Amino acid sequence: CLYLWIGGMKILVTGAAGFIGSHTVLELVESGYDVFCIDNFVNAVADDQGRPVSLLRVAEITGKQIPFEKCDVCDINQLDEIFKKHKFDGLIHLAALKAVGESVAKPYDYYSNNLVASLNLIKMCQKYGVKNFIFSSSATVYGPPKELPITENSPTGQGITNPYGQTKYMMEQILIDVGKAEPDWNIVLLRYFNPVGAHKSGKIGEDPKGVPNNLMPFVSQVAIGKLPVLTIYGDKFDTPDGTGVRDYIHIVDLAKGHVKALDRIKAKGHIGTEIYNLGTGTGYSVKEMVAAMEKASGRKISTKIGVPRPGDVATVYCDPALAKEKLNWQAEFGLDDMCCDLWRWQTQNPNGFLEA
Ligand code: WQD
Image (tube, helix red, strand yellow):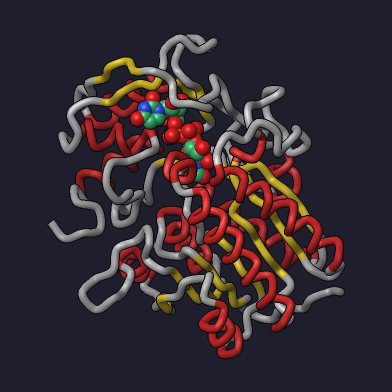
């Protein structure tokens, strides 16, 4: 079926108040899409009127109102009311629990939340005739890479060592099967590598609750003095300097990948189910990331060597050629941009979205 979208498409964004959500909403709005945002605040900060601070900042940056409703995607009755009220042309599903370590400790919470939320959205799309579904997947579905660089044809589902990664893999399989059964749907699975950095305004950024799990928010908090030292999880990996290598991608590049996926659906009318890596194709080691952050911040970042985390692999980076070819998308920001933008966010918001 050829869709004729006149004017802006109206896109539901779940998990909209989070790190990836807020940056994606900003790029959608700047590209002329109408958005409706939902979030349950499990990983986001509300102001004293219950409004998501990150999306208030997006409104400040863009000068546009950002429609929002607090909603847990696991609550199908509230979802139904939202779908009934709005005529969505598509959705971008970002809402998920995403802490790898926590998922090992709380597997039921991760399977129930991440799977039920996604299944609810599929049901709503079927009920209300929404045929465009963009899903936030993760490089974690590849497990320990069998080959490098990782392409979209690299094997998935083998050796995934945590429930979080399993939920992403399972949802990919469910959406691929739904795509086969719903031939006029357009489904895009975006496999994120390691998103870092912040919007250049310094008004939005990654604001982890408690001690950061991921490398760069932790490094940034050491640089500003909120944390005393970075533990490098292993320096005996088979990499140039012995520390883990990952494909870090600027959050704004990642956000723009979502816009490009919608642009492709809009331009082609029907694409069926497609899968894309969103990464730069370049890997950097932990020590290289620390050095880049020291350069960006002008601060010394103290480190110590610890034991590797269970399941951590030496090297992960992707081949982003397919997204370039089909989405006309590629990462534009480099390591210095990632670190300078992260540092601006960190220094302008030492307490994240909480008021100082
Ligand atoms: C990066 C590198 C660590 C912290 C995970 C998820 C993935 C995605 C991104 C959600 C590794 C090292 C880290 C620290 C360290 N999340 N490190 N000290 O593990 O590549 O990916 O986050 O979608 O799904 O699997 O990212 O930032 O945790 O680690 O030495 O305090 O930094 O060993 O080499 P990872 P990370």
